[in-house]
Amino acid sequence: MFAVMILVFVLGYIAIAMEHPFRIDKAAPALFIGAALWAIYALGADSILSLGHSAAWNKYSMTVEGGLTDENIHSFFSYELVHHLGDTAEILFFLLGAMTIVETVDRHRGFKVITDKIKTTNKVKLLWILSLLTFFMSAILDNLTTTIVMVALLRKLVADQKMRWFYASMIVIAANAGGAWSPIGDVTTIMLWIGGQVTTDKIIFEVFLPSLICLCIPLIILSFTFRGDIERPTDESIDKDDWGTTPRTQKAMLAMGVCGLLFVPVFKTVTHLPPYLGMLLSLSIVWAATELIHKNHAPGIKNKLRPTYILTHIDTPTILFFLGILLAVSALQSAGHLSLMSNALDGCFKDATGGVFIIDVIIGVLSSVVDNVPLVAGAMGMYPIEAADAVGYAANFVQNGPFWEFLAYTAGTGGSMLIIGSAAGVAAMGLEKIDFIWYLKNVSWLALVGYAAGAAFFVTMCVIS
Image (tube, rainbow, N blue to C red; front, side, top):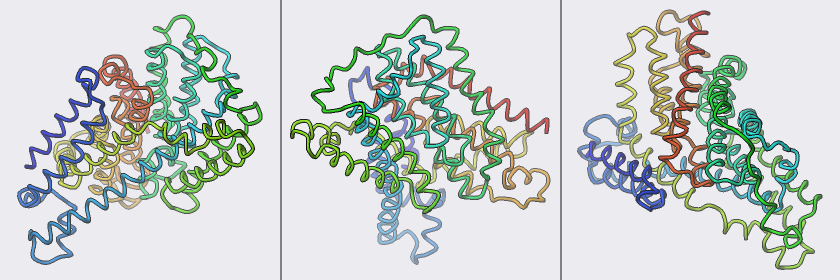
């Protein structure tokens, strides 16, 4: 059953990749593997848990008596499902809140304030402007929120779908690269920051340049292949008079939306509560403000601009896709597949020259297939933070040691190599309906080259110093 779980995950992954040839929305196979893996895990609990690979069960079994009894197994699965569903729900509610705020701003044509400032139609100039804007925004917000905002903005600037896919893909690469050097830019950097593995000043100083290189190399390559100007969408199929928006309303909604999103990392820092609570708090304020703005408008206009109406147009399949993928990965994590993989990496490369760098690079590559959060969590569990005066191999694991800083880079940027390798990629895929195979053929190699260049720069700097 342990091996069957891997087989089901791989088959489901293939079905997701072949979404367009199979003509089955990616949410369906994602939900299937999410539910099926937990079902297989539960049905084969005796054989899977007896292997000893599940750190979750090993820890839980110490608190109960009797070992692998039906009662203990049932209690264990009840606890595990609630635990992992809680982690999954945090991401889903965060995504739902961010998408609703962005869509509310968009419905009020708030992004027109920004798009009117971007005058260039040159493909290369626009590519650099959007990518660098995303890179720095994701360090302040986070890569997921920034991707949602930038894709909404992109729709106002680029009409051709395939060309928009290229820009959206670069937004994903830029968002992941920007999130890697900021302690609040990505879930994994937040984990390392809160866990004490890295500090704010060091991660910014050490990881900023590798992350910038990771973005700039693909940009430079595309700068030699892009030619001409982009075609902008014809100004809106929606007539602004029918929507009751004015320049003043547009600016007000844009300001509220941006401030609401910027408030989330502040809320997280001040309260130490999960970011989704800050996002929901921001949504509630934007929601109430929207109702007050339109309280005197005609019912037809008011209803179309209310968040209650906007929520019915949120991309629900993308949220369900997230749910399925995260449930599937959590099943593999709970059963011990991911910890087994981490231990195997450690056993193979611990004694090799530059072994810690090899492990980090492989974790980055794996994060394009498996969610980077459990991979980083596994690494944090495998390696304790060593004392500041540690020497030899252990010196790599002191606070702000090269292993932790390089892990922030590789886990943060490695997911760009596949469109479903990061939360930002999944969001862009759902919002723009980007084809998995198209991304694999046209963008994955760019992300790989950028990833390798940034990694080489980081390792070189460590060797020189």
